[in-house]
Image (cartoon, rainbow, N blue to C red; front, top):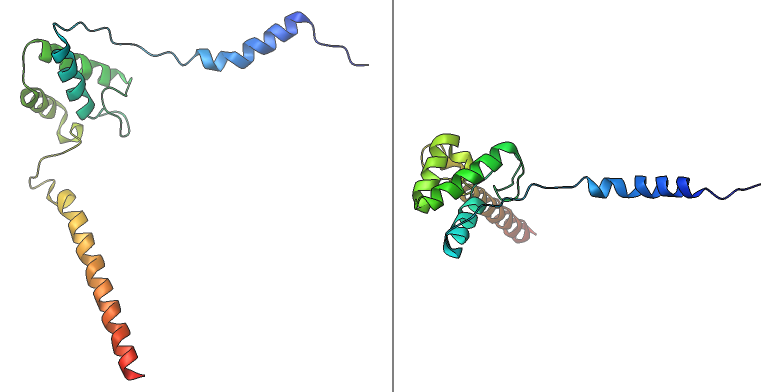
Length: 141
């Protein structure tokens, strides 16, 4: 015969069901800025820099320790009155061009910037040759 579960068992089951939802806690930055413009500038810069540890996350999205440290560095540099260019240059000097979503055009990134255009050119040449071959085959028939 079936006996209904006791209140303690039901409480334990409810606890185990809701336990995974409670473990998704995040650290919230509580950095104080002098004015809303500084906060907006800091958030904009942190949103444009990539976390070196995470896969395709910016500093605002990542909770990795290095991202938290970098985010705080951005906040303090904005509070000191540094420009976006100065902050980006400092981060690039320290962590390399990888932290920039838009790396500069130089010898090391030339292929990265040229590859989409080269692929587009290749597709165009292949399409042109296929079309030329199709016209030649129609002419023979």
